[in-house]
Structures are given as C-alpha cells and as structure tokens.
Image (cartoon, rainbow over all chains, first blue to last red; front, top):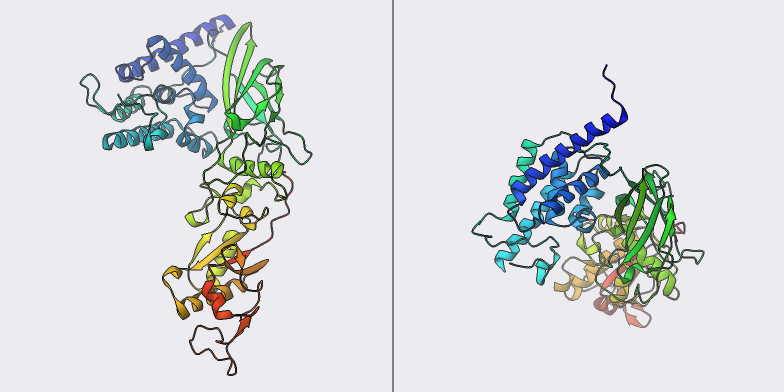
Length: 122
Length: 377
C-alpha cells in the first residue's frame, strides 16, 4: 500500500481543493460573470473560498451546494444566511444536518423574482 | 438601474442591484439567470466534495455560543451552540445584573482567539469590554431605557444583534472569522418583557418561556408579531366557542407589552400580555341591533361563564359594566322577557337596567391568571 507522508498528503488535498475551487469558480463566472453582481475575478474567487467555509459550517461539502451558497453571497451579501429573513427561516427550520443549499437558492430566486415583478409594476 | 434599497414595498429587498431592465441588450431576467445557473451546477458539479484539508486552505473554524438559556435543557440539548441556534436575552435579570453572553472557539479545539464584539444598532446596547483574548470570551451588553423604549407601538421590535470577530492563530497563520448572533422572533418577543421588567413601574409579569410562544393561523390573536404568546388564550377560545356553538370574533387577543399600551391599556400586568385573555364579540355584532344584539351577547357571556377561567367580564372599552362573572337572571313569570332577548325586561344591576348594560357592551372579556414561571427572568 502506498503511504504518503503528511507533506505529500497536504499537496494532494491542496491540489484537489484548488481544482474544486476552479471548477466552481469557472461555472460561476460563466453564469454570473456577465451580470452586475460580479465583483471581478479576484474577489469572486475569494467569495468561492468563503462559500466553501460557510457551507462547511452547515456541514455541506458538495460542489453544487458551495456553488449555490457562493451565488447567493454574490447576489445578496456575504452574510445573507443571517441577514435575510427568508434565509433565516430556512436555517431555523432545518432538520438536523440536512443540506439546505438548494432550498436557500430557490428561496433566493423567489426573492429576486418578487423584486423584479414589483419593480416592473412600479 | 433601479436601486433595490429605496422606497416603498421594494425597500424590503436587500439584495445587490438586480435590474429588471435589460442589461447591455440582454433581456433575460436575473432570476432566470439564477435558475439556469442552479441547473448547470446540479448537472456539472454534483455531489463531489469541495475543499478538504490542505496546507494552503484556512483551518476549519467553528465558534460556539452560550447564554443562560442555551444552558437550560428545556431549550437546548447542548449548552454551547452554533450561531444559528443561539438564543439569548440582554438586560438585567432577576439578580439585577446585566446578562452575560459567551463565545468560544470550538474548532480548532483549544485555539486561542483575539475577540471583538460589536453591537448592531442602538437597540442592541453597548458593551464596556468588547475585546479580549483567549479560547472563550464573555461579554455583557448593557442597555438603557432610551435604547430600548417600552412606549406604545404597533410595530415589531428589531432583533438584538452582535457582530463577533475572532482572529485565530493556527499553525503559525492568522485567520479571521466573523459571525453574527441575532435574536429570533421568540427572543425578540421575550426581550420586550425583560425591557418592561426593567423600566415599567408595577410590571411583574415573568419573561415568558419560549415554549409558550407559538405559531397561529388566526390573525385576530396576534400582537405585533407573526408568533403569539399563548399561556391560555387558545384554550379559552376553543372552550368558549364549543359552549357558544359557533365561531366568535376576537377583538383583542395577545398583546405584546408595547401593543398593550398602543391599545390604550393602562394596566401594567394586563392578562392580554401573557396570552391569557381574550376580548370576544359575536360574529356580525356590529350589524346587530336591539334584542338581537343583546341576545347574542348574552349567549356569548353565558358560554364564557361555563369555561374554567379567572374572570368573565362584560365590558365597554376597558371598563366592566356588569358585576364580575355574575349570572344574568333568567326570565320568570314574575320577571317576564317580552322582547325575547333572554334578559328579564325589568332586571336591574347597580341601578341600571340589565338590558341597557348589554346594549352598551362592546365585548366579553375572559382571562386566566399569568403562569408563575420565573425561571427566565
């Protein structure tokens, strides 16, 4: 069995991490890059890293979950999960460590749509 | 581009600028772009785990919070909890000392941090010692009456909030984490009782248990909040409606303390404030007149008297107009009821005709005494 020393293991996990971040960032840039919420590549990469940490705080590690958390951080704010009433409700109603990224994302879309509809009428 | 943080009903939108207008010729709505992006993430990213330990990544940092309420087993299985599960009140407790809140670094285990706690908004008070170092940091918010008004209001109070910044040195590198702790609606409601106990003369109602604050689908039971405090209210209502045989209209249910004042009550410990009182009217009473109205009120009053309660009052506004919980005499051959309202035509109480008293009544009040639960004060 191949044994890795701690430095080798750290290098591999760092590479995995970077690859993962790059994948999430690339897709995020593809969809949000042309919009007004894109803060620039450097800042957006920081948002992806912060989203990874935030998602981990909710015991979610799937890339698609991190993507959605990052998208909400871009569209609302870094602390959307404590600032926004609709997000707080979802967090408070969470059952155990159930993944809630998609619930949050769908609720975020609904909030944006509500705003868009109201703005069009006004 | 519209600014979503301005004017009217749109003001509640706190997202960044999201224009409903086309941007650079692209007419796709932002919400549609979000939908597309989410679908792409599901298809292209999937469940692969992101991150993981690595030399260049920040360590997993987890803060935990404690208050005297997370320490109570009836509220929390764990004394130290994540920010999103944190429950807390501020202000002086029963020992007349300001409540202390705590935060610690749970992960990396035993790590030391430099702490900075910042109150968000005047209503969150001030903290004399808001910086410190160590694995754990205790902070004691102090509030004044000016910061936490107890005057009449029909609007909900804002949540008390603190921003907590922890700078942690781990394996030779410095990492910063910022968390917000925010009162939920149950604690926003409970905080009103702490405020009243500190500053309102004669206010002795206890800080209600969180478990007494409940959801309801009856808007007529609500105070300034979506949730209601209900120590006996729905039980009284259900029992009264069962005895009455139909729904009743609740003109006043739970009143949070500030709403109680807005309703004109001058009674410091009004039972409406702990969700133990109801003011009820027959449905459609406003359209009723004469004997029909009196008969409906009499039937409701008698139904309420069959319910286990502290008192039943026939009131006009805030004043009782008939003796507390007293029976209304029934018609007899000697005391006839020619107009068929159920009240003897010649019956009197306190020098007034009972029929006249029922004519001026605005509601039937029923209540139970406040529960003696001082644990959370």
